[in-house]
Amino acid sequence: MKIEPTAITLGTSGLGRHSEPGSAEERAAVEVAIDLLASRHGFVDTSNNYSAGRSEAVIGIALRELGMDGSRVISKVDQDPDTGVFDRDRVLRSFEETTARLGVDRLPLLHLHDPYSVAFEDTISIGGAVQGLIELRSAGVVDAIGVAAAPVPLMAKYVETGVFDAVLIHNRFTLVDHSAETVFADAKARGMAVFNAAPFGSGLLVKGPHSGAQYAYRPAGEELLAWTERLQRLCAEHGTSMAAAALHYSLRSPLVDSTVVGVSRPHRREQLDELEQAEVPEGLWGAIDNLGPAPSPVDDSDYA
Image (cartoon, rainbow, N blue to C red):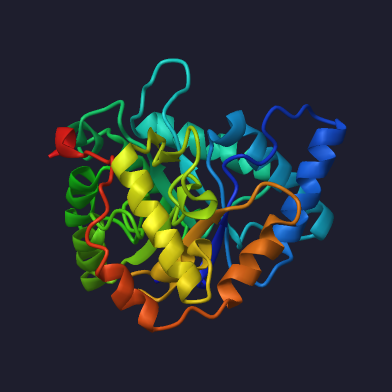
């Protein structure tokens, strides 16, 4: 089935983290989820393991309070948290856990999430995780299946199978790192929906250079911090923010169908909308190209 997301998908990896059922913290998270689901953005993205299941639980409460079904929720199946097992049976159990938390019977899109605990060959073999996803799609309880992870060489292999309807890659198609470009191009050529996640690279492209700064969950080295400082200055000279440029780099790409941005706190969705509506001068893109490639700390060579 063709997935038709809106330009922005709202991520919820931190939603409900450390909250207890019935607590004030849970209530605050539910209010955030209600805001996301009631927004103009097409999908809310979660996963079986986000916040140890609390993300889905909180979204489930919001769905019930709004009287909505799960047609605007994308989720992901995850490995067994105790054993690391990630096979067909685990995929089916993961889906059951997800739908129970959400209080729904079906989903528009279900991703295979971070399949690092098993070899690619095992994942796509008989009895592997991909078989479980295909069975769920064939049963009609999910409309489409995708794969969501990061290492570009590994993601290229999954896209090349021709099995999936969608792909999600994070931190590899940003102002800092363009390495997902070839995989996204292949996915588009196959008619897959392309989700580009984490356009801000762990916050570096919002906060700018600072002590302890990271990109893609890795320390941002001195060279990257210096490059980012030049980028920040360049954006200011063009009358815009680095955060706006980072978001619009993804939004303007013909390779990307939807940009996934995490929103787990009050008012963050409004801030995101402001960035989406910001004017980014066309001349900025050429000026950024003139900065030369950023020294990305990402190294996916182990997956080649």
